[in-house]
Image (cartoon, rainbow, N blue to C red; front, side):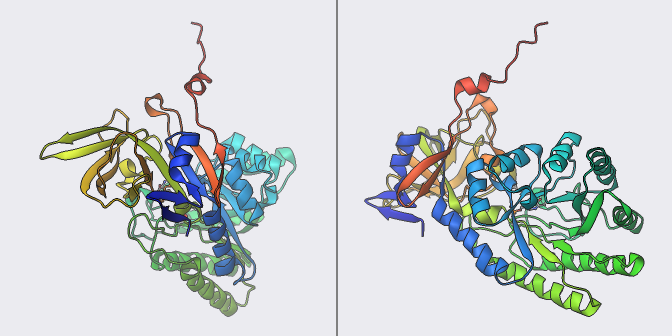
Length: 429
Ligand code: LLP
């Protein structure tokens, strides 16, 4: 395990977290390379090595920096990007373009241009309008691209409403209506500029059930069969998305195989019965790769005890480095890194420094008595923390450190106040 308590102090992948806070300042995102490598290995042993003709494309939206994507690349994984920015990041990490997959419900012309120009391995298109746009770019550049269609399987997963993506009323994917989906599939089959490989779905995020995946898969297999019947066209690739749940407080994570084995078994049987070869199968995990591998360190500042109401403990970050509690009522676990063996004696609300009452990181957290200057460590912040960070209140975005077996280095340096002015212009009116 990467977390250890020695001399009343929290150690993370062999590093004294209070020393990390001193060296790099706070707030600080810290990632354990050992924990990341464990997750990469789990993808290999529980999925890639177990099933032939499979790929795992890390969903970069969970946490995207060149240093991290270099580790992902070295682990032999693919990467799923959703913007020109993430694509540029992957290219700057020397990710082979063939191993980059491009998702998104409204890819901009300039983003598709870059994707075609750099020769990404897959473009997961969201509908006919995108197909036409892509065809015109491909025709202009004289390049043919491999594509999948993302479909909206119309299933409802049990998670926060904001992170459900597969239900019918969704901005993602092509709806299943006969007169929308089949003309779109036919147009891609007939297009000289794209090579249609198959279908993609993603049902939601932070899921602990296999049911919605299996339901979505059934819908997609129905489309595969109907496409074969209507056009004698065989799909050669299926992408089942990501969404595997992690532990924030008391959730018990399941292994990759727990979700993916039943899907693979169903896919195998289905194609055997249909008399067609089993397509390549791709998964797109984000949170489950980086979420538990990251923690955030803060320094405690102002403490306000409102008698009979609540005790507020303010830290030097907040919703600017972790919007998830404010946006999704997400829960986290924290400990005092420099009083790691002290018993929890108080129930406090840990809040940030933004001018916003909703800027709360932990509600009713059981912690030892905290004082200004203490280091607070919040666990499982590795996914959708840094990647959703903002400059609200002109707060600089924190640094990101990578630690391994007692050594540490920066993946991203802290923004400075000067950085915040770097894009300012004088309109000269
Ligand atoms: N593939 C597609 C097409 C997706 O839309 C997503 C996530 C993933 C893969 C990766 O899902 P994961 O394995 O990370 O659950 N900001 C929210 C999460 C939004 C997820 C959106 N799509 C949060 O902080 O909970």
